[in-house]
Length: 176
Image (cartoon, rainbow, N blue to C red):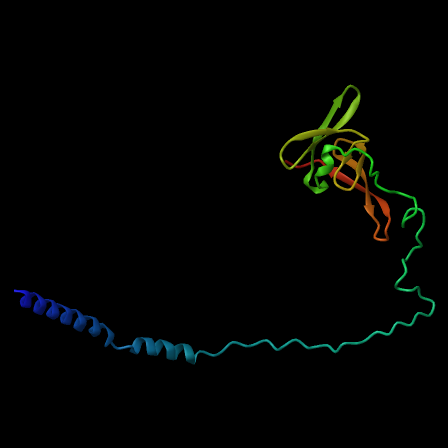
């Protein structure tokens, strides 16, 4: 009995093998004709390489020109290590100074007790009020004016020459 099962199993395997190899002997003429069609198509145009310019050296002739290694304007009281404008390192920081100015949005104004306050929304959605003299933003921005559409600031930023300079900035009324 055991021999009959193994003969039947061998016969079944042989039949399966015969059927599976029959699928491999099929003609591939349709694939070959497609490949021939693709090869017969005209090729695309390749753009020429860009023209390479030769390097032209520059020889510095000082003449009456200033030295390129000296500042354009002399270091005066507003720049350099001397006095002039500087952020106050001893001043207590206000809460809104921890936010970049571009992440703050003006959402309105509030008249309270004769004083006009600007309403500023932070990126976390909380609304804070500011008045002239408050500090906002990360560049020592002091509020110098408030109107219905914007909060005007004066920031103290590095001037690139080792000193600082004042720069006007603003927080505009959002369009939400």
